Length: 255
Image (tube, rainbow, N blue to C red):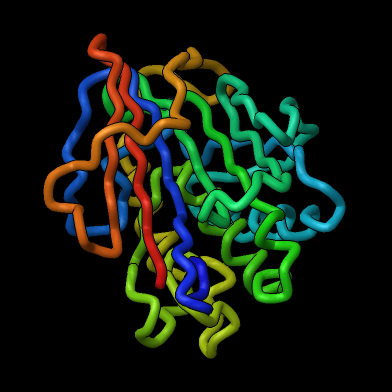
């Protein structure tokens, strides 16, 4: 998502905490590892905790409205349950936060906690005002794109495209150096909704929406870079405690 400028390297870190075996990261579509919320019926509702400042509220509301157009899931913005600086997760829902997290190299970070290999139990989104308070990124287009994309990762959606320099696909799940376009990359497109319908086509015998167990493994250390990701614009890191808990960090670099 970051825009190439002044040969600065920026990273978007997509982090997931797994509570069982690490699944395959390869896939032919833009489902992210098969991760999904367990639920016994569709559509179901994911609550988005509002821990963002007034300047972000309308972008959170827009993203919530956009993703609620899905046939399988709804979202509802509720009072936040986290301190923006730490953005600690709440079981069974997402917490969405913004703060000046510093020159970390990323615009946004999404985290999901997993149980049973693929079932999401909680999620967080952090938006870094250190960059969004600069002229380059302090635009409605950049704020809409990053909010839209990071929330979608907590549903189990991956990117449709990771090339910054090709024509926009018209979806917030597409990397770009110009989110405004044309076409605009500020909202989901039909392919995103179709992919969600595939991810959530099956039902579970239990639910993780509104309940779940928090993981204790700290994801601030990315751990070991996985083979095959060195030197590319996508880098994958894995941190494990050796007892079935791991953190997967998905970093996309931009020149």
